[in-house]
Picture 1 (tube, rainbow, N blue to C red):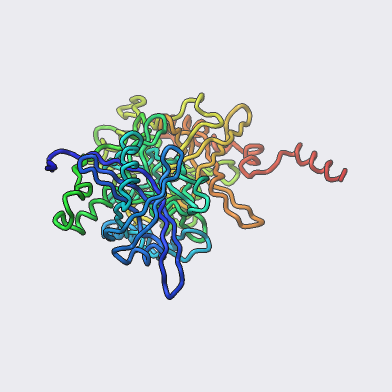
Picture 2 (cartoon, rainbow, N blue to C red):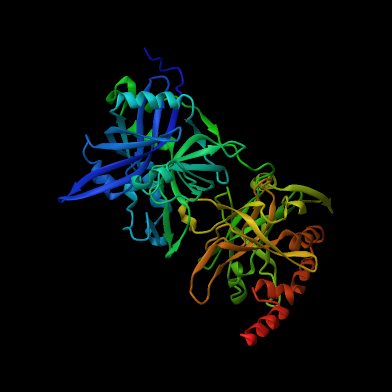
Length: 548
């Protein structure tokens, strides 16, 4: 007799599913990823996957639909047969998908550039299969007991490190792509509920249904937390580069709601397992850096909360951003700037303290934002106390130490790229490394990283992945003016060393003239930011051309 009061341990293992179906006498062959689940308490083995393709949906429309399953065990591919038990839809995930990927915002969900656009209802469909081959199933169970992932209903947080494990590109080349692993981070989580999230990891076509796993300190896969829904999607005809994922907690919960316990035999206790919800360990070690969404004239960008002045009666945030984000305020005196700090669903008014002139090398601006008293403590918890001056307490963002500012350092970019305000998502995080640091007169003036940046990321934060401290303010990515090709993974940032000294002086004195030193950076620094070669290199190139 199985005791329902004893928590179950659910083990999991990624697999590949191959299926053949017929539509109007045409054979449809499909291949996608899935996850084997094994209940230690009930000794039951099954497979859960996503029905996110027309071929899959047609094939699984019959309850007795059979598939071939491939799983990599100790470097060998084992093939087993399985039969579908049921198919269901998660209404919660469907509603989140509709809220985030609204058609009016020009999203396009595809598996590859040649495929038809995916309809959102299909992305919230899932299937459950049972293993037909008992002998092979027994071998898999033995392997799962020694080398597998546990299921965990962890609270998914943006910025947390994850691995994805899947079987892309189908059965013909399984030996090459079996259990393919890609490392990344959680980019974003739906604010309404964490059933839907995105990861910045390189998920290939055919990864749909694959596993998303939390990791330990050594980047080793630890617990199954979600499943890949689609690996490729576009916005405004540009490849985004993220994968859309569904949490395993929401997938199993939706199945329990769809099919009550009485529908299944006791062996299906895997679907009603008592698994405690735990916290997802974040990679941040200090106060989590705050970003803000800045809106003006229907457009938006990002800002970073870099400091604050507070006393007994009031608190003012100092937010750094890019000048082009608030450009509209200079052409019309009636333009208002609305600021929404992450984690607080309120819009506050922002006021421009400083913006660089056209002659400056830097695209930089500073905003002052009064904070309602009931939110003062919450926002100050994300800053570090610096000093007290004339009854004002001065707080600043934690910045990266100079020794961490070097090529190859892992970094994250954080900002409000891609998603409109009504999409119910917070700031998006992407991962990368510092590709290069450009110095002038012994000082870093430009940081080049390979973090993905999209529209809306301007003014966001470049963060040291190890410490969570601020490295710089993201400005732009690169677009080839001749071909029109956008390179979202070639991005540039203004180093903290350029603006933080002036910002500290301003918070101490209240005098915005201290920022004028940013207008003195022109000449070679301006040339660097315009991606222009030096005059010496131009002369060398001319000589070479003459010789040719």
